[in-house]
Length: 366
Image 1 (cartoon, rainbow, N blue to C red):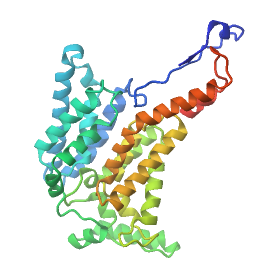
Image 2: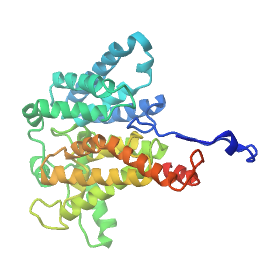
Image 3: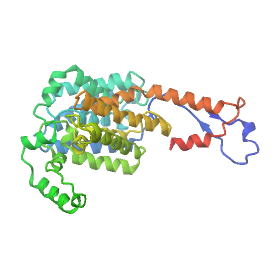
Image 4: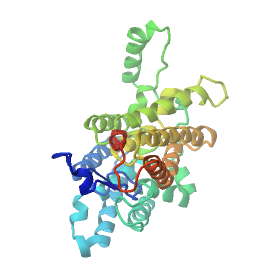
């Protein structure tokens, strides 16, 4: 913490005192959450669930409601004595439940959802001191718990889901909407470049087969991600950088046959939960670091690990594991930032003086 003394303020007229605090909590601005932000995230995620539920007989809705009720009841049990219903009103438990629902297959058993949500609230969120002190995104923690506690059931829930655009085209008929939009792009836009887009990609926005809820409600989630990014809940460039770096890696080295610059970019971005990760990055001011260089490093690292887990380890939801790994590194990154900043600003300074480049640090926070 840096704070001006009375002597330093003398002679500066009415200039307000500068105060800067490094919080040891690993999340950014989560210690003072915005209720509106939480409920907006919850609403955007629920719109994705509704799109998915419209074509799976309500399975996705059952999963989301199971997660929601479990999160609310669990948080009430943990906080009722001191806070009554105030913790529920902030929307953090509801947002955790909706994001967790997005990450799960629409055929996963509700019992697994119950235990995963309870684990997210009790262990990930509250065992480390509550919102803002958790070292891992609670929704990601719940997903990891379900994914590795019931690996067979998780895999079976994704049976019959397409692993590539070619498999999807073979296993289902291409819609008239897809053919019409594809023809429009090929004839009016892509014809300039001499490139032709195959059919099937626009159907990914309205996927009806088994899969992750976020992939099945992709169109609604894309709109939600754009809205949240435009509102400016978090730094808008964070999800853009993630998509750009991950997309580059997919195109460069995402071909299963090892052919460079032959990766299926659109399928890679529209499947495997990629947009869900962009949604989380856009919705949660907790990318890890506080300074721009540190944030940029964590986002690029997340994109590289996403490519590694999905295309080298063949984990379809590799983006989720990658984001969880980056979350786990957050305390270390924050410690490094603090040490580097303090050492840089204390070098050659007398004890008790305000660092001259404090304003530069404040710029880096923006």
